[in-house]
Length: 84
Image (cartoon, rainbow, N blue to C red; front, side, top):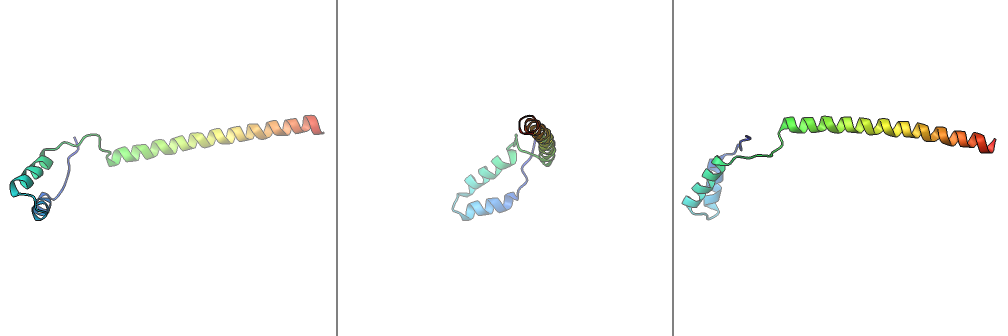
């Protein structure tokens, strides 16, 4: 479970200053305090995703280079066969 960290006093005061009744502002703050935030990306999630992306990019580059070498070989072979 990921928890939400915030300055509840400042939020409460901002709600009151914006015209929200005191009881309603307190209820909103209590709702924030008891809220469970799920499916939020953590730093570890972001780091893992960056690693997966870099591995994927490496795989793509390896395939692209291999295909380019094959393509150049094919073109060179066709050139030798038909134009020499």
